[in-house]
Amino acid sequence: MFFKKSQYFQWLSLKNLTYRVLNDSIVKDSQGLKREVGL
Image (cartoon, rainbow, N blue to C red; front, side, top):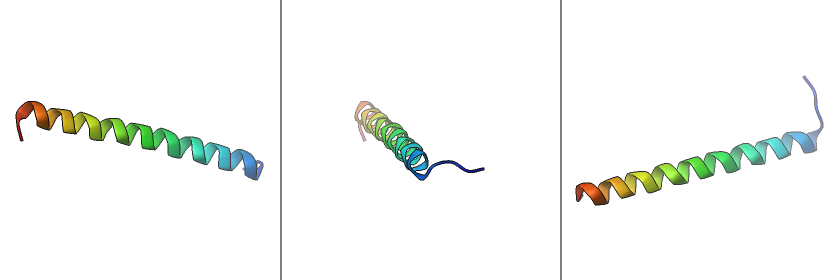
């Protein structure tokens, strides 16, 4: 299993970005839920 370092870093940053976006939306969802429940 071997591929160019640049490809690996591209993949890593893409994975990081996807994780951040997912995490951000989860945080926003939970905040919205709390507001609706009134906590």
